[in-house]
Length: 324
Length: 313
Image (cartoon, rainbow over all chains, first blue to last red; front, side, top):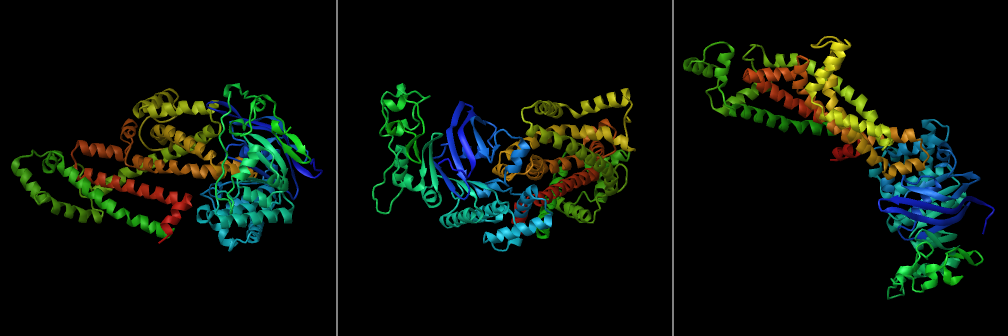
């Protein structure tokens, strides 16, 4: 599991967010590795800490969020502790990011060319003309028609799918070793989703980019990922290769998640049950399993035992007291 | 873009027509007889007979709509009539007073931009730090301080005590500093806060996150991405304020004895100089309309979304 080729290593990451109602722990003890040419999928519902994890990889957490523990190592560089200028140089050129909503990721008052050219010129020593040529070449690679016109157009004149492809083109042009794709298909329709996934796949195959693919769409994950981690309540509750996770899910949450998918043959919809745990006040928030209130199998052992991500079998980690 | 300009300019014509109608009617609704006012201004006792003769002479005995049409025909030819007091052409009088006002207004605009834009941006970027608190105080003082008081304070300290600037009047560049600063001061606070708010809003936009994720330098993100978008609301306000300042800053012009539109307008009201009042009103209205047009055009220049909306047939 501890791959020799891992480019990015996240170890024991803990993030807290201060809100008007107090401090909340949004990411707990998250560890994973990204390897070249592999796709690591991160699944989970809204608020499970996926986006916070992504943002911390570029040291781009919002002001109210803070990493309190853990480390992020990119090729022996400590992302969380190196200078602002050093991180800035890594962003875009070494670790790139694709935003969730392409329609808002571009500045509405500047055209596509501005975005593309300024990104290239920030990282490469080229003049405007060279940057423009390069931008057109990469837009063409993304199967975007009339790249010359496209550069002059403004974000509101393009569709979400096109903007997402522009974003991928920008990413590609700098050939980063890691791409963070935070729900790249959520804001798009089915046709565009497929297009985008194809292009991401290309990025992985042609450029050997390691991709962190965040999604709550299990179909996307199943299609793309090599390894998957399921997040719940800020914890990684299960981590395994995509085949193992989809065929033999162990954690109750993963199982519920997989069951909730709509099948072609299934008539009755199953959903995650809300099970109230008796002796609710006995739950020790510090140590209790975050899934305890919705878990069908929960009992008092879940409330009081320290949770750890343990190897259930080789390369299959589960965070559940019942399975250990 | 040129289509956009044509569209905007043509839409001005009905507005200007409306202004002319309203100023004409308003003035004729106010109590007082223009003919009597004319006679008084010419130091002739307004006897009934003299008033009646003059009314016929000035066309004031005709029905109101004919008077209006006659006036409008002349206005279109840029003939705003003859002042009752100075017996000069109203148009020439306005032009004579308009240039000092333009000078004052533009100098004030420069003060507003040079002072409020950097402070507004910086206080947004260093939100909550001492510079932000300091700018809050400046803004508070600037909007609550009456112009005449500030004007006298500036005269007292900078002209009388320190002898840096001339006290009154118009002439050299130094004469311009105190009045324009006084005129600009209340606006400075407003625009500082306005820019701060819109910058803060934009700093949280996803496009800033994406710009950072692409590795852009913070200075570039602020100057190229955030500033341009944050300027839009400021610009709308600034255009209106420019219209305000161009149509005469009565108090500031009075304090500094500045021979501008404001003082011309006030004097003509005090003298009941009807053609002059009417001319000034129409002229100020036109200035406002033109300023709004300029704002629209700048807006379209800065924001492509508006440009395209106007460009589509």
